Length: 183
Ligand SMILES: Cc1cc2nc3c(=O)[nH]c(=O)nc-3n(C[C@H](O)[C@H](O)[C@H](O)COP(=O)(O)O)c2cc1C
Image (cartoon, rainbow, N blue to C red; front, side, top):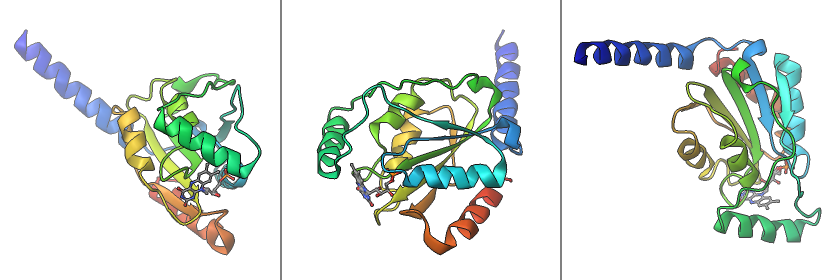
């Protein structure tokens, strides 16, 4: 029994390692993102253009206010309450993806809470999640550790910080990041 368990554990380790480091292909890659003001959406579209991967925009049942000062307060309220804003759409078949390029704006030095809802809505075990985070200078903040805590069975690697929409260097920065991710 002990031996069987040890063999099983070894097999699982090899399987997990090969799943985590398998070369991603566009067909098995999903670009999933949340964007409040459209900047992250623009970056996601550029990644889609470069890779040909599927795109999923996280949409909320109750969107945040369009007003900047109001959304600042709403976001802080949700973060303090560890809220999970309901998402109105669903990825048709998450099992077909092994790599998720996950985009979001830096909100109060971390992830917007809709990203937490998204990460708790599917089984990401054995998948690779590569974050890309648009921000106003705070870079990634605590967002990567927040993601890692939410998906302990996924491999979270190669995060990319993008200053607002990325400016003139966006194309080059994305190319370098995609290369790191095996594209
Ligand atoms: C609620 C809220 C909180 C934000 N908090 C931060 C922050 O802590 N650090 C930072 O660098 N930028 C912060 N920003 C700026 C956004 O990260 C930045 O404008 C980003 O490009 C917006 O992307 P989007 O248009 O896809 O929503 C915040 C913006 C909003 C609306």
